[in-house]
Image (cartoon, rainbow, N blue to C red; front, side, top):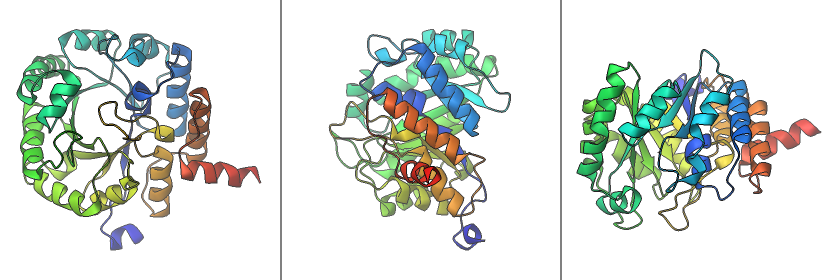
Length: 307
């Protein structure tokens, strides 16, 4: 098998972040029924992990203001994990009431980015979500940790891999069962990805690490494949490549889930995702958001089956 020769995993867990990380950075504010429909379509495609929304300040991120209603409206499948981003205990209570399967907390590997993004230092951000993790443990809700700017910061430039490793270790030791390493502004390349994974995996078990690459410079898929060869088997992606980063000028969206699924399928790696259903969902939400469909694999696949 190709994946064995190239030291690739036999199966990859895809974490779909489009309904949250994608939509929160889109200009078009979507109504609850549209968001519900998007999540339901993603569920039907076979995606096993979907980040549905975020329980954050509606003033700061208006796109996520209706997350509770979205959770109430979706058609849940027993084998799918429906998660939400939670910044504080107030958000956790809302998440708990919405019966989320998992929550996520977030921190940055850059002090300046942390200040610009959540108006506090890195240490202060950890202090804020410690009680959230404690409460989640008591409620038996798994916690995922996000770490942004792992390969570069729009304000500070290069971010040292050792710093990322220390922060990732803090998240893991605080109780995050999984730590997602995010190249938030999409500046990283494969060689940097190798150094990052090698360094961080000395502090956090490789099986507990995920990667989250934006595609600003067209390097996301190359970085993902490189990470897989280093032992990563969890990948974040966004249907139709939705999203971006409001704190990084010019930073485009996440890698499109369709492009990731196509590549993994061709390499013989199992995802359990139906590419046709996923691509149709991607095309549909792009039209709703009044933007061009960004997934190259999705465009090609849908054009092929129309013939």
